[in-house]
Length: 149
Image (cartoon, rainbow, N blue to C red; front, top):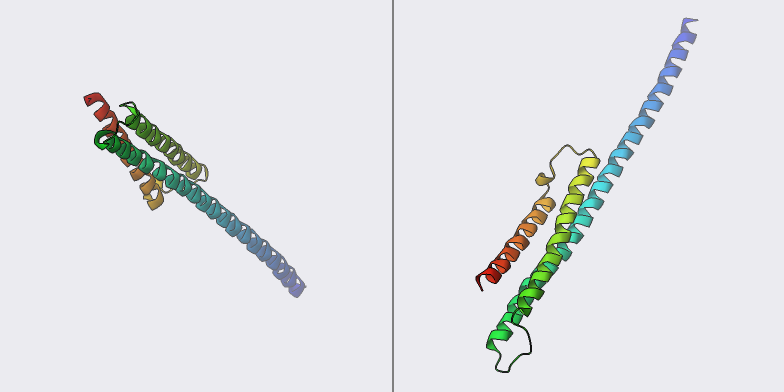
């Protein structure tokens, strides 16, 4: 009878062990799903960074090119004096606002996912914040030029 109890105990133990392995696999699958979601958030933020960087760069470039054409063109260019500033400033704003929204969305997603580490430790996040600051500095410089004129 003791052998039967041992068998029952060992049988029950193996079932419990199988359930624990199954539970661990689910936990691993859940962890991997969370990592995939975080990586998807990274990709989405980097796509926003790429687009914003292009818009900010194009805004700054179009401002400088149009200003150069306005100042150095031998022919009279039919353009208002504030056109380079307006177009460049608009492109800078169009690049900065979505980047700010992307950074905020990324932070909220990480918080919702229960990530304990700060998003500031992520190099992608640091790059996004640096580009946001660069775009803001360019916009402030452009606005400063407006106020000085």
